[in-house]
Length: 141
Image 1 (tube, rainbow, N blue to C red):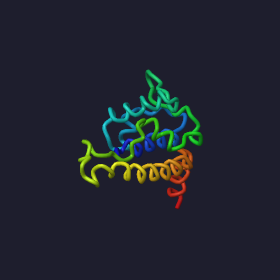
Image 2: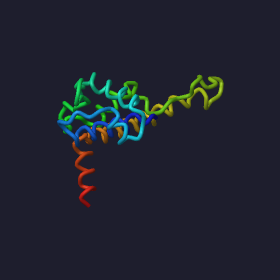
Image 3: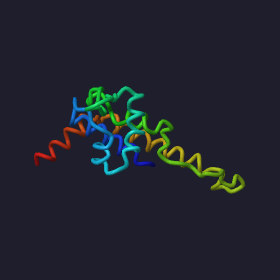
Image 4: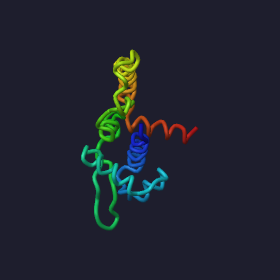
């Protein structure tokens, strides 16, 4: 698994907290502690999904245009990782003459599919608004 989901949620949360302000990819990258190119790449995917838009010129940057309570984390994952492959199987086919080799991928896929379903349900219950609210609660604690 990559860190795209975590970074993507981070980006959208920053934009939600600064709603209405155009933020540069450099500003967002400072929060994430990564290169602005990484941020721009993910923002491009979010723009295609209708979550954000960019404003050009002086005072330009990125704006969250979708309602944070309408963006669930499963949608964010689907935008960033369209293959939805949480776990990878063998890079080459296991030995089909071996009892384990000819059956392991089917067994693992059953387990992985069940794990994916549990994770997907949890991500679907969480939104950018709920992440933002939790962060704000911790700030006040």
